[in-house]
Length: 289
Image (tube, rainbow, N blue to C red; front, side, top):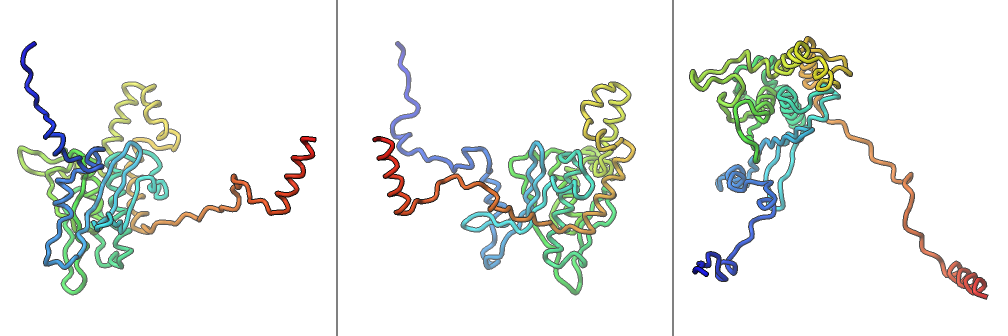
């Protein structure tokens, strides 16, 4: 038998350090998180706010959070499953829904901080670059940085749709146009019309028209919920326009009523009194006789 060199010796395992739990679960990139949460010492413990965007199979989560020793504290949050209240009942995970979720987060946060009237953002979604301007005599705009987690930052990703919605909603987030849909890497220019089409779901509408012409059965299968709600390729843009207006009109979250705990059946038995225990013992004796 040939000689086999031992690579991992006993000394290796004695000095092995287990990684953090969320690193082992592939949930947190601590290399990026450290740089997102790091705050200058001369800022005197001022919180460093992050716009956290997470995309799941059925929802889009947008939060404004800052780090503390005991964990992250969330200042405001918005979810794509809230959009049916504003008229968007289907397609809750596409780019247009991500824009609406980011817009909802921005307006909800600024309303909470009494800055909604001072910083209205871009009232018209035209797909062009927009940066909020600081007032001469008033509070500064709310500043935060984008936290995408483990999501790939490819051009046209939905996390940048949420970013664009938050910026148009009045938040100050440092960014460039390089990752928006419609950016040409050769000419280094952003096609605002194409970006606007994504914001209003026209890429979905084009696919709907394509399927209607090519395969009617596949169209009915893929867009069954659209058909059920009466949404066609022609009124997709109008649906998102109404949603943007409704979000700006009332972005405040509605609290759910507390559940009535009295109606639930008590599963554990109540404790017997002394007289009840004596009566039960006498009944057991009588049954044995």
